[in-house]
Image 1 (cartoon, rainbow, N blue to C red):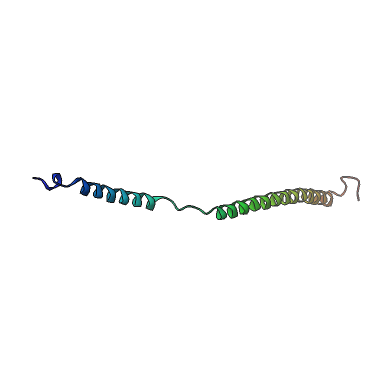
Image 2: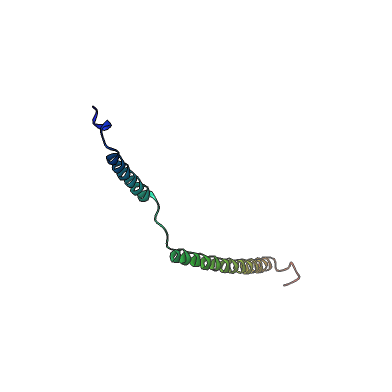
Amino acid sequence: MNASRTRSPNALHEMEGRLQSELEQQVESIKPPAVPPAYVEKLDLALRNTRSTLRTVEKQIGSLQVWLALVSFGALVAIGLALTPNLFGVR
């Protein structure tokens, strides 16, 4: 007789248990590690702070752009007046 056919139900049950255990270990080994909630909270706080800082920087850049436009316009007017002194009746 074939050896696999003569195995007892108990031996088959043990083999099934070992295979099931091995399968569970392999499944566990491919699962990504769990991220601790405290770490997630720290990342969330850091993200909120970064967004707040970004909004502040965007506002500052906007203000600088306005000032740059005003200064540039003033410089163009000054250059225009310097190159054409009689344009507005200035001698």
